[in-house]
Length: 463
Image 1: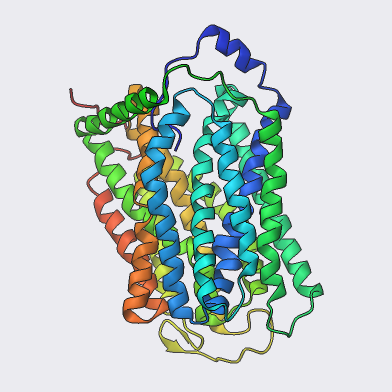
Image 2 (image 1 turned 180 degrees about the horizontal axis):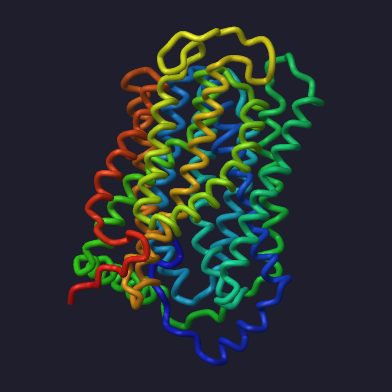
């Protein structure tokens, strides 16, 4: 996201200063911030708190899913409006850490407030909803200034390894806190309706976010402050952004691809962001069941990323991406047919006694979400690789900035659509059809892209 507008090359003196900050310790400090914020995404937004909020705090699974969609879409719309401006500031070469600190300082207490969420909260639900919106906005905006600090901590030859380290630490953080949740569920006293394990999650996530943010705040240095007035920096940056977008008319393949990506990416968001809400609301899954699935799906996603890379190399980015989207379509189709006693709209045994996932419906839901995690991850691999193949080499950095912007600008549409459909039809499964709309739409739009097959050369930009 911070690639929206690219600043001028760094001077020799600045390069020397920057080189002095590129130690392994500094790189580790930078990478740890991904581990600091990732538990918010997986434990709050996807698996544990989202399900608890929608089904226990709100008390009505259908309205809870709709409200969750409105919360996410409101946050995403705010991010879409702010991101170009903040991306301009981040790329102007000025200070980034004060903005990052501001995001953390707001997000941590907003996350901690979520511990107040409990059943029968009444009008207090609005406070929790507001805290969720604020925390999600800060979560997303912090990535702008966080990503902009990568060139400060590592040379370009190590960008991939340092970025990979950050995601590895993030996955490790999720596994640790999933384990802590499962352990707490076995040790905390239940039975009084207070849902202590679910309410235990937000303050732990908040403290984790704060503690592992300290290394980047204390050890990573800001670049030298830009002497230009902020108004000029922003004005010039937005002008460059407008020029970059206007240039897309001369690159039809890239333009068609970015439009297609904005659409099918919303289908990815629907599949992954609502799994906890749907599992809890439709099947009555507990936080333990969702957390175990989260752990397994973390491993499945690794397999999906490896599969996506192999498929991309062998078939080309366009074919690999089409296969990934079709895999997501199959997953989404299966999900809308699952109920407590139905799979593929056919009656199944509703008995809930036995293993952790006793019903055929439980197993089918687990399989469908595993399929989604596998193919969404594979799709993300080919999505990025495809742009690299079809973009003119001289415009690659500029177009990756627009690629990041395109993923943010419409990210509110998926949650908003699922919220409207859920409320309109009073059905969580009807809401899930939103994913099919975006996935099929993205597939159709992708057909207009003529480049990106195998290792074909990109369609040259017309003058």
